Length: 83
Image (cartoon, rainbow, N blue to C red):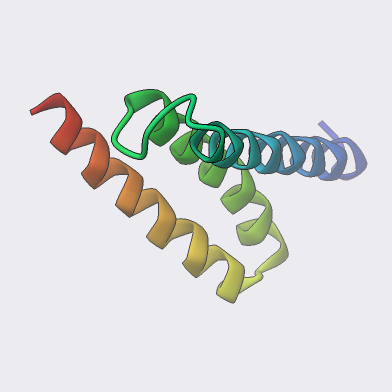
């Protein structure tokens, strides 16, 4: 895969990730799910992974730090939900 295609794919994935996080937030705000719902946490986790790969590629360390922290929070919440 050439660099141009990788760049575009990374951008598309980060946009999908952003949409996942926004939809998850919208679902909570509309009282369709709660913060302790596994769907909400999974949407956040997948979203931050997709956003984070773009942050890593761009070496945007501040944004990547936020995504890692958000991902850790989602993993902890998912473990609590499953337990």
